[in-house]
Length: 339
Image 1 (cartoon, helix red, strand yellow):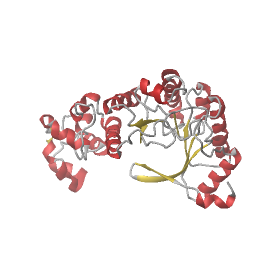
Image 2 (cartoon, helix red, strand yellow):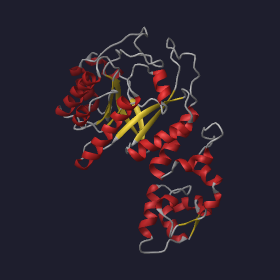
Image 3 (tube, helix red, strand yellow):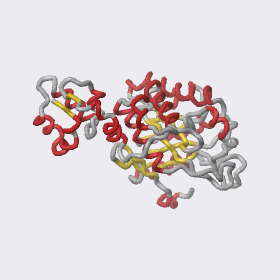
Image 4 (tube, helix red, strand yellow):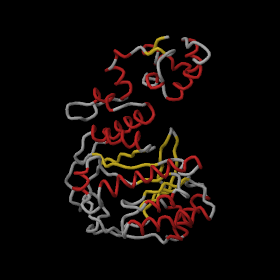
């Protein structure tokens, strides 16, 4: 890409914690040797393909960052060689960026089957790392990605290595944004399968983020006639993810939020719907209940729940104290709490 084309690069605007983070999101290569049945870059799709010159990718990323157009880089790749070679090429890019003064966020999406030693090398340079799990169901995985390797050994094991690396070195400030993965939604799985897998990934491996990508049929692929996934389904799954990660929800908590097809029921706000369905557990006494019961109250998030726990160490929580903590938002919670 020529130097003067830099202003025409599409910048992805990632969202997180109510903020927008502009990032340069790119593949190192769109050349792929695999035959994933859903993907536009599958081996037999007749499309234009290319591969970045690594020095040029470093240079363009730095220019975008220096101009203030991006805050970070998301780097993935198609699988054009063995996993070790592809990830080593990715590492050349992220290592080169850091050596040339790049201080932005780097999210590295590595390949199935990546060796453990490369993962431990990568975390020296990146803020977040992960590999796509694609689906919670191994049988679906082998159906849609027949030559992508072993679900257990090349996907889950790589996520385990990433998780171990994060746990081993996070105290040193490495990999400060943790481990992530992505699932395609709408290819035969149900929401309960997604929730159960998400729960294990978050609670057992400590993943900080699970991304849900709604399936979109791509012309010229074997799955071109499959139905697209509704965006509303993905929105509900993201709500459920945050309830698992930040609010301590268990799979049992979701039981009454699922219909007979094991799909999440339609709701604008899953947490509020949970409270409406489980009205018998309320009101919650703010002076003696544990954190994960308090945070289930509609209108009370993690920061407010922690403030309540802190304040009740030395004073009784009263409506007046709660109003000091919450302001006008107290009206949303009064019918769910007791003092």
